[in-house]
Amino acid sequence: RLKQIIPIFYRLHLRSLEDPVHHRRPLPNLDMRGRDALEMKQAIISVEQQILSELGFGASLLRETPHRHMLHFLRSSALNVFSTRVELVQSAWNFLNDSACSSLCCEYQPHEIATASIFLAADQLQIQLPSRPPWWNACYTR
Image (cartoon, rainbow, N blue to C red; front, side):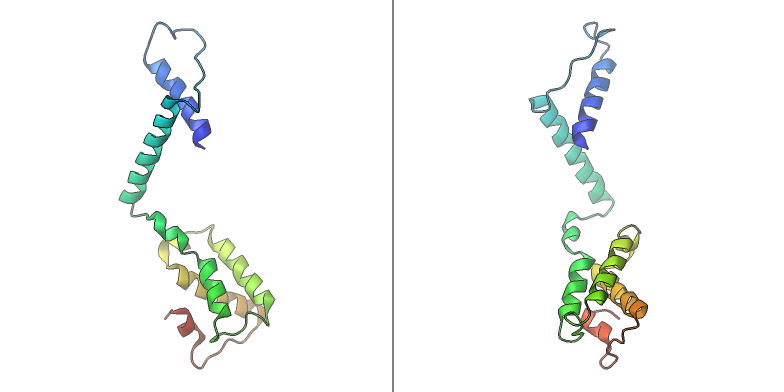
C-alpha cells in the first residue's frame, strides 16, 4: 500500500541526503496529507502506469470480467439454464474464482474463460448443454 511505502522511502531519501541535521538523529515523520506525500504518491502512480502501459496492460480491460460474461451467457435464451440450475451458476462462478489465481486472464479473452467455466461446471454436474446449435456459439467462442 502506498500509505506504507511512501513514509519508508521518505526516510530512506532523508538518510541518503547525508544532511548533518538528520545525522544520528530520529528522522521526522512524513505528513501523509502534506504536499511532499501527495507529490510522491502521484509520481509513484505515474511511473506505475507507464510500466503497465509498456508491458501492454490496459486498465480498461479490467471492466471486462469473465464473471460478467458467464452470467450473461447463462441468462441468454440460447442456454436458458440460469433459472433452473442455480448450482450450475455457482459451480461456474467457483471455476472463475479459481481461474483468477492463474495466468488464464493473460492468455485468453474473458468470454473464452467464461465459456470454459460453463463447460467445466456442466461437466462436473453432469448437465447436458444444447448441442444444436452448439451452445458455445451463444458465447461467441469457437
